[in-house]
Length: 402
Picture 1 (cartoon, rainbow, N blue to C red):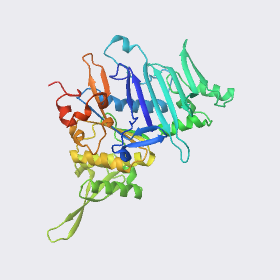
Picture 2: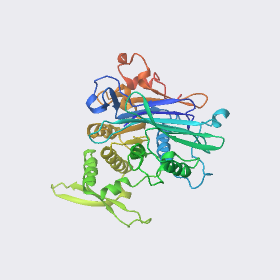
Picture 3: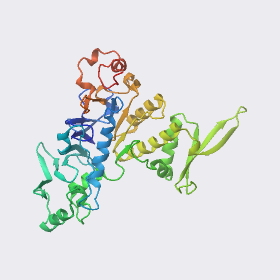
Picture 4: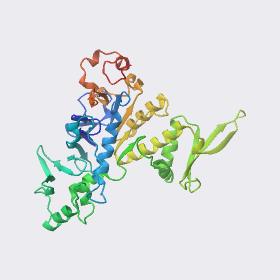
C-alpha cells in the first residue's frame, strides 16, 4: 500500500507537493476506509481530487503513470529522453531536475509488511540521483543509491545487500544514464529480494491508470474469458441497474480483428414471458461501456491489492453510479487503493461515504503552477453543515473563477 507520494518540478507542479494516504485516529467509517498496515500506521484506501478544468488534477494521475513506466522501461539507447516533463512556465524550472519519491508497504502473506521509499531525481537526458531504502526499524536500510557526476552514473549497494563485484558491475553496465536501476536489474540473471519486492508492486497489473490521455486496455474483455472474473463483471453491471443478463467476448469478428464484447439483455414482456436479445458493444451506451471498463479494472485492483487511478470518474456515468462504484470498492477491497479525480461535487454531501481526509483539491496559481492540498488543511470543518455548499461557494478554492 502507498503511504505517500512526493513530487516537485513535474508537469504543472513547480513546487513540492505531497499526496498522503496516511489516516488520522478518527473512527469514522474506519472499517471501510482504514487499514492498519503495521501497528500505529493507518492508511486510507480511497482519495478523491477536485479542481477546476486545467487546474492540474489529472497531472497527479500522470505522475503515477510516469513513475511506474520509468521504473520498468528499458530505453533503446542512451540518447532516448527520460520522458520527464518539468514545469515549463518559468525558465529556471525548465533547467532544474524533476523529483519524485514514493513510500509504500510491501505485504507478503504471514509476514510483517515492510516500508520502502524509492526516490528519483532526473532531467530530460539522465537520472541525477536515485535511491531505494527500506525500514525494519526507525532507521532506513539502504538497498542502493545512485548519483551522476562528471558524466558518469555510479551505483552503490548497501552493506546488507550481498552481491559479488561481478554482479554489481553487470548491473552498472546494463544501467544506461536514462533508465532506472530497477530496469537494469531486470536484465540480469540475479535475484535480489529487496528489488524483487519493489518490482512486484510496480510491474504487472498492480498499478493501473484509467484516463483519457491513455489508450484503453482491453482489461474487461480479457477478464470475460475467465468464468469467475466474468461473473464478477456481470454481477457488477446488474447491481449497477443495467438490464444485462450475460456478456461474452467474440474473437476476431471486428474490422480490426480485436475481440468484440457481446451483451445479452433480458426483457420481460407484457405477458410475463422472458426474451433474450444480444447486441455488440457498439450498440451499448457510453455509460455501460465505462462501467464495464471500471468493473474490470476494479476486479483486478481488489485481487492484487494494487493502486488504480481514474481520471474524471464521473465521465458518462450517472452520479448515483459514481457513488455505487466507490461504495462497492470500499466494501469489497482489503489493501487496495483507489484515487479518482472528479467534478461531481455531490460526493461531498455523502456523509456516510467519505471521511474528510479522503478529499483533496488542486488549484492553479496566477503563475500557472498547480498547488495540491487536502480538505483537512482547513480549520472549523466541524462547524460546516454542508461541505458541498461550502465548496460551491468557494470556501476551499479549486473552482473556476467565473
